[in-house]
Amino acid sequence: MTVNDSEARTDPFLLPFLRTADEQEARQHLDELIAHAAPGIATITRSSRTPDDAFQETTYRVVKHLRQLRDYRNGNAIGNYLHYVQVVASRVVKSQVRMEHPNHRSAVDALRHGLKRDPALAVWESEGVKLCGLAPWRDLPAGRSERLTRLLDDPRDFVDVLLPGCDPIYSNHVDLVRAIFEWVGHPVRFDELTKIVCRLKQVQDLSPLAGGEVAGRALSEWLPDSRRQPDEEAIWREFLETLWAEIERLPRLHRLAYLLNFTAGDGQLELFWLYGTVSIRRIGEVLQIAEEEFARAWPVLGVNLEVYAGYDEKFAALWQYLPLADSGIAQLLGMDRQKIINLRRAAGDRLSRLMVRSESAYLTSSTRTSIGRPPFIRDARRLPPTNVGAGTTSGT
Image (cartoon, one colour):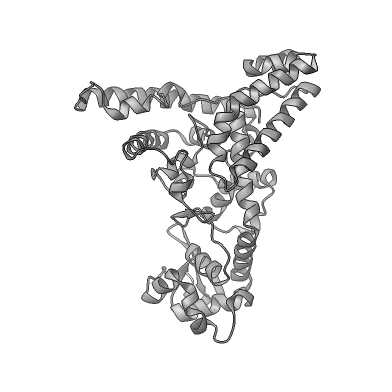
C-alpha cells in the first residue's frame, strides 16, 4: 500500500502530525491530539481502580503508536482516531483487571482441570448451562437445595463440615470439590461451584457472568458517569433497550462485526450490561459464535482453548479482550478486514434507519410532554441514530 493510499484511509485530524517534517511542530500537533482525546480516555479509564495510571498508560500507548506511524509510514492507517483511542483505553482497563487477579484465573483453571481429569467427577451441559458433579450424576439437571443456598451465601461457615480439620486454602481442588458434591448431594452449576471454591480459598471472584460485581466492585461503580440523575439513567436505559432490540434483529454476521468492535457513542459494549439492558451471557447468545470461529480467535488472543469447556466460558474469556480489532474479527470469521468494515457500516446504516422509524413511531403514538417532545427522544439525541454506526473504520 502506498503512502497516498494510507493517507486516504487516515482520519484527517491526524494528517498534520503525520505530514510535518519539523519535530517541534510534530510535538505541538501531538499535544493537540492527546488533548482532543483526553475526555474520551478519562471516561473509560474512570472505571479502573487506578484511573490516573490507566490514563497515563493509554496516552503512552497512543503516543507510541502515532510516532511509529509517522516514522515508518508502513501503510497502516487509523481511520477514526477517537475510536482508536477508546479501543486502547478499554484494553488498558481490562488488562489491569486481569493482572490484578492472577490468583482467580489460576484457581478456576485448576478447578476445570480437576473436573476433567478425575474419573470420579463429571462435567456436562444441560440447556446451554455447564453443570458438574459426581460421575454417577452425569446428565442429571442441576439441583437447588437448602444446603447449596446456604453454601453460596457464606461458604466459610461450612469449612468444618466439608473438610474437618483441614484449611480449604491449602486443600487440593479435587478433594475440596468432592467434599462439596458429597455434602450438597446433587449437581451444581459450574459458575456456582467456582464462586464457592474461590470464596473457600479466599480468592476474589470476578466472573462477569455471575451477577452483581466485577473485580469486587458493584456494577453501579462501573457506570460511565456515577453522577447521572435517576431520571437521566432511566432515559438512557430505555434508549439502550430500544437499540438492543434492533441489534438482535440484525443478520448474524452484521451483529458480529458491529458488536465485537462496538464503540458507538461514548462507550463500549459494557453499556448494555451496566445499564441492565442485557446480561453478558445474553450478549454471547446473540453473537452465536461458532466453535470453529472460537478456535480461529485463540491464536490471536493467546488463550488456551483446552481449559474452556462450554460456550459461556469461552465467551467470558473472549469478553475480556473486547473490543477486537478489525483484523482480529476478520480472522475469527475467516474473512478479509475490509469485509468486516463493510459489514459494520451496513449494520450501522440499518440501525440508523430502524432507530429513526422507532423515533417517528414514538412521536406519533406517545403523549407529548409539556415542552412538546418525549424525554426519551430528547436524550436519544446524545447518541443520535445517525451516529449509531460511528467508528466504522479502524486501523487497530
